[in-house]
Image 1 (cartoon, rainbow, N blue to C red):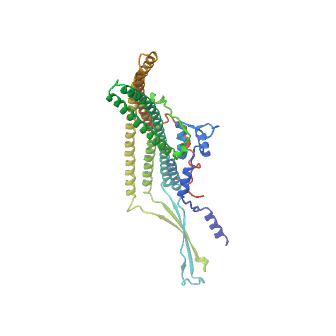
Image 2 (tube, helix red, strand yellow):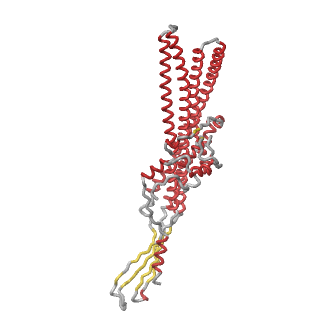
Length: 475
């Protein structure tokens, strides 16, 4: 008997959580970030799990948009923040489902006036057993589940934001590299033109302004080349940031951007709206927020009904056993002065606010889709026109080359035709970039896998507790 309180105390302590310190080490975290590489073994496992096939040759040297998206999903810290917020919300469902603990009250008393009692001590013990009414626990759990669902959709939105950043920066990097290559070729051709004109000027065949115009064009191309190389370097740095890596981690890697756009060609505004309003994560999150607001209102209305408290008690008299007493108390709050009207009014206002936010978001999404579709169609037409112009310049250049071979024109005429072709190619490169940017805006507006398999987004949210590549504390 004497050991029972001790055993009871041990049971209570073993069921309690204990604090484990996890101090953050900025130096170690910075070192871990610097050490991230494409040859990471954990990244290989992550890629295999989410891409559906194994990599025999590792590490990879060629990376496309979808594989780089998985790299960003593995490394980028913003996805870890969204995951942590989701876990916080998910933990709230456990809090919401908790039942109120009973309590015990001991009020020792001292009374020397009890006749025939050899001990003046009285020990009354009272228990409080709370009982929730009107289904409050179920309503509280339903609200917490909706909040957790909203956080899950926020996690998906964060994944799409990462995907969007990777795509945009990979496109910028690819286009800047292609533009730099074209400008380098153009600079070489213009330099030959300037050399030929210089010879003619020295021979007195042309005037100074004609030579100066070509020299100015050469200098401008050199400036454009420097600007393109600078943009390529900047895009490379931003691509590394979008992947959650340092720029040095990109050394020795080849990046391939797929320019095919077959899926988008089938879309119209009506189809795009249906896709977005059915699958966009922020739309679904707003719906979950509204459902949580409704459950919150149900809970506040249920709180009008007071909870019941059972209070059995026992008063022990050590001197006179016959004087010990049992009692059974019942406590019920009387909703006379307050029927929870204030919290109910607040909950109703929050539900109206959630509905208004959903309508606002839906309107914004529809506007985004309409602009993206319109921009896509315009970019398509510009690319089509540019293709026609480029084809004409290619025919012109081939004709000039053929005439040069038979001696009908000189080298300068051929170089000028090639220069015109380069200018048309550069203009078409800009048109192609605009089309790809419009496609990216359309994909962002839909948050639908036009090029990324939907299974990837589903898989990365299935196991939020899987180990991640970076530790936030000392071991």
